[in-house]
Image 1 (spheres, rainbow, N blue to C red):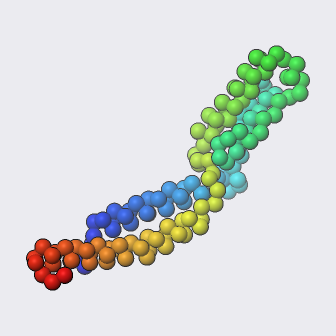
Image 2: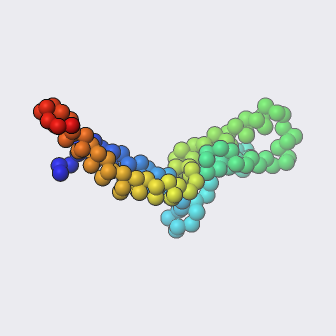
Image 3: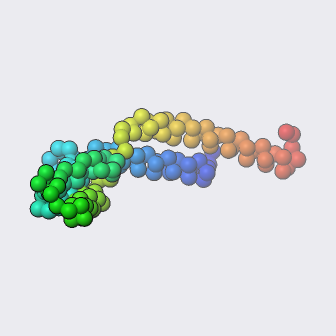
Length: 140
């Protein structure tokens, strides 16, 4: 049986999806294999620190208690600077924010690729054969 372009495209799409899932679900680590520090930013000479979580949302915000004496406008400027620095750090990271453990989904996609794609090819071949028979006026 000749390779079917439709099932071949389907296989390529599944392979690309599985590769993307592998990249997203791989735990972030530095060169030593240790878990990477979460993206963080500082302002006011380290007196304000913002840290992002794996999903890219603000995980924690620390403000030196003495800064609470500042006016709200100046304090919020420092906080905004720290949060934006954390966002910039996240964008500059070599690994994307983690979406959680996707190993089960990867396994299911591999199973779909390994079992459903051959079945899809057989189904499409049977449909093509039936269409050819009908076009020739043969038995249904």
